Image 1 (cartoon, rainbow, N blue to C red):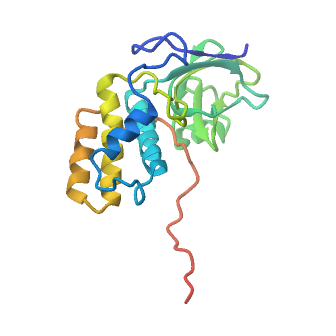
Image 2 (image 1 turned 180 degrees about the vertical axis):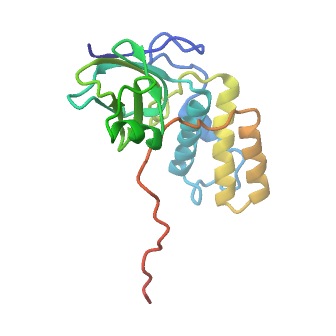
Length: 225
């Protein structure tokens, strides 16, 4: 089986393309500029503000898990599942109709590397932008429920989906905070950022690593190295 469907719930509209009808990119941009000193939009540009608005849009979507997607497909011959291109955070995963347990590298390796007997449950780990299964679930139907990224706002008339009037206000306040920071007005920037963040849950703490490669703390050689 193969396909993708929007999961109903959390007050989502019927269909991914249903607009909020509450604010447009142009509205949000104008509101952000209305509180800036740069009336000529030269130092802080419209492109800057559009970028800030989209950053806030992605952030709120992730914090509130607004866009939930159910992807149904089949694992590959090695029992692996690639991350969807719009993947933010996993909610649930069923393989062969059975819920699986997401585990860390240590637990996964303790079973998979010595190839011990069947573990306490069907397990998966996230590695190199894919899910790996053990015992290997090759060519098996799966259903992945996840938080997906919404489409960026590009045109003046574009409207964010799943966004209430209160959240629309937060979008432009985030943009105002970043623009104020660029203008060097740190105190006002912090005020707008506090208003953006007030009452929002923290960012998702996913059960797997999005970028599993080790972080290098070795600085790049300088010109006098």
